[in-house]
Length: 248
Ligand SMILES: Nc1ncnc2c1ncn2[C@@H]1O[C@H](COP(=O)(O)OP(=O)(O)OP(=O)(O)O)[C@@H](O)[C@H]1O
Image (cartoon, rainbow, N blue to C red; front, top):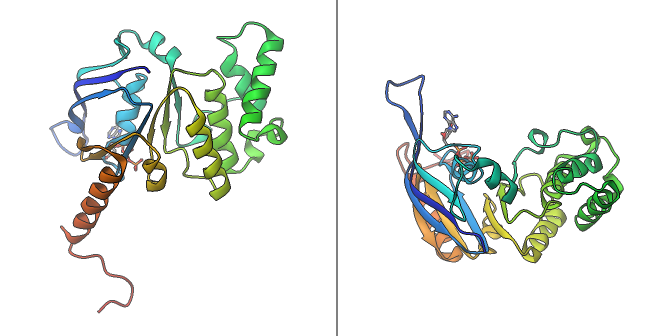
């Protein structure tokens, strides 16, 4: 299994609202060697930032991130060959008119032979039940269908590490189960952020990100319990308890 390491990683950006930089992640240390790593946490806590560091889409302001010892900044090309990244919004990823063309484009670098590439694309589309939609315009697909198509395009090249940023947001129950089943059958390492706590429970290890730090790191059930407590506590302050409509 690949090993992804974060060594004293801080990400800070210039802020329009304050002279001090805004800290998105603060001194994160991690060694991820499990097959299934989940990342959960509130909106804006830093999950996407953490994931984007793994393939060099975000660079650390301080510290280093490495995949099997390869620095994600200095060896970014090598890292990107082994790390596949699936975005939350499939339209920021799918660039070709149809899903089939997109999957074939993904394979272009690694598979020179055209027929072989077509066969591999066919297999990747088949795996996610997408063959009937393969030649339809991307813009005529539903959000969930596009999300699966983006996953097929990344899975086709069989990256050693698969990073998924909230992959189930647009999926219905059936397709969410298909995603779970697909992830369960993958050989490679998966690092996935999600708001779907049931999906998080399928992982081997779960990180809870809170305000730019890893507030909990451990077994999925414990991490989910920690996160629930954190959220419910958060609802009690600073604005007071959340009241439903009609609450006196
Ligand atoms: N380039 C940037 N410049 C300024 N602020 C940023 C930038 N990227 C992210 N942020 C801020 O950093 C924080 C963490 O963002 P991030 O996208 O990592 O959160 P998240 O946990 O993935 O949230 P969500 O669950 O809503 O997707 C947010 O407050 C966000 O507004």
